[in-house]
Image (cartoon, rainbow, N blue to C red; front, side):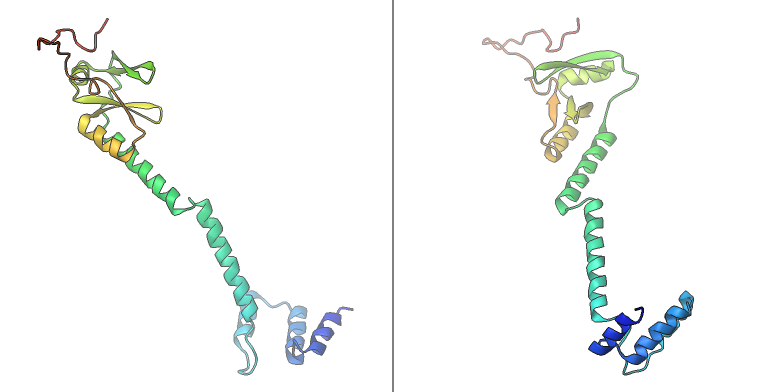
Length: 189
């Protein structure tokens, strides 16, 4: 029964007798990996190669499937990679130009949507915020102090960014007579 498949392949003509005998011998005498390679390299010119066209096709399909799987695991499509590159660019811009100070003790209150938020600033930053030279940018749940020019660059890169502060409001209220009101926009209580 062990020879039945070999016999059937011989009858059909898919395998020659010499090749079937070589396979039979190689199974009996387990050769090391180096010897198997040498046997595969030494062939007669008329004998077909060990790697058939179906084997090559199967190997190409396997490599293609692996490439597709790896590319989807590593980030997927070109659009996703572009999004990631855009996000990294925004993070680098904010990280390099951010003016937040960990030692700041003065609370600055600003309106974001329907809520009043707070960020701690220094006295100098507070003066710049009220004049409009510095703005608060709300991006991905974090608040960053940025100069106006950097905030405009950030808006170009990420339109979902919310800018808050005195920069949104006019510089001063002017009444009908043209007199400015001396009351500042941001009062400290």
